[in-house]
Length: 310
Image (cartoon, rainbow, N blue to C red; front, side, top):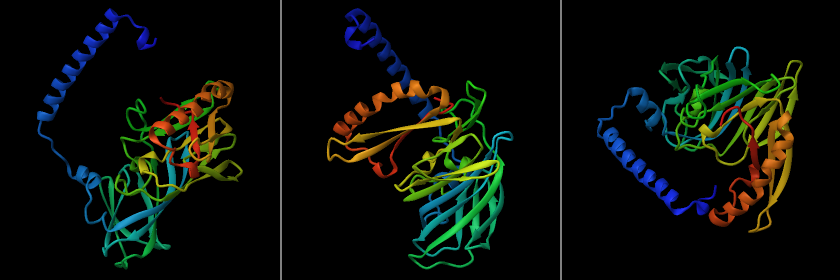
């Protein structure tokens, strides 16, 4: 019901309820903020910018993972390209301690490292020169964290669709990217680009950020390769696996007539419903463009993906 159709007395009740809620919220907030905050060593490692994090700037990631749906586990590797900002001999990489590190290497040569909870402190073989661009690769495996109520809490969702087929998704905005892949898990450092490779069983589709650039077919699994060419924050790196079908459209900007690709991925039996529901996308983009400016990621397209959580 539109708020403009509600009669005055009824609106008054809503208004009074709102005032009561705001009063209650302010009281609760005051009680919470009056408590002394304490931070652990792990909080500081993850949230702070220590000397093992500030000497390098991440420019790109290449993430290659295989999700074992039956075991609810992951195995893969991540290569990080970085630029040296100042000389240092240790690097912090973030990855939850539940995962086993299989190897860490630089240009194919193994590196020494030690665990500090959810952080990995890597001993660099030599101090690199200012402005140098280098690469480090972390191979890992382990059980994935399971979300109890995504997206309100973090982790993976393993469920079945209405046809009994597997359906997988991940929500980690609050939980952090290092809950499932190794990275510099701090908001201050976004890579300029990223490649995400996800292997999925035959007959299923794996979706990630950006554009689908290649599908490598295998005997048991297919590998879907996605590429992002715009800066992206690590917690927004996302994958979904399921019985997906694809349809597309094009949006023409009213500001400069630029063409924006619209890509939609939904479960196969929801295709017709999605085609009807997603008609709202174009008028929404028109509104946002008028009020907030153009959609900023034309090079990566606009994509909606049906997920197994809200």
